[in-house]
Image (cartoon, rainbow, N blue to C red):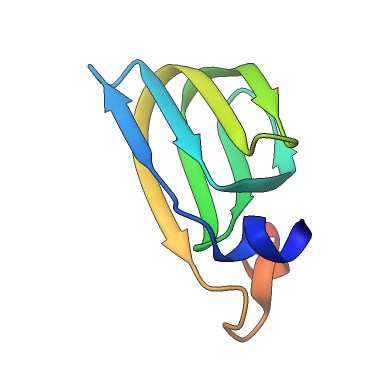
Length: 90
């Protein structure tokens, strides 16, 4: 089942820069009011903004909903030098 999730579809939806919904979610690496770092089957998705909170998370179905003021969405690859920890030590 884990292999199916890693190779499945990934869908990202942004509504009025207030809500982000995504499928293909494997895990949440870290989160606070300014950033949510989500591990997806297509790489690491970082959502940045203000007053962010996770409204819904279901790793079984691979879905997440994030609400707040969305300023930036950025993908990075787990294979990049430094991986997930690269962004932690800016």
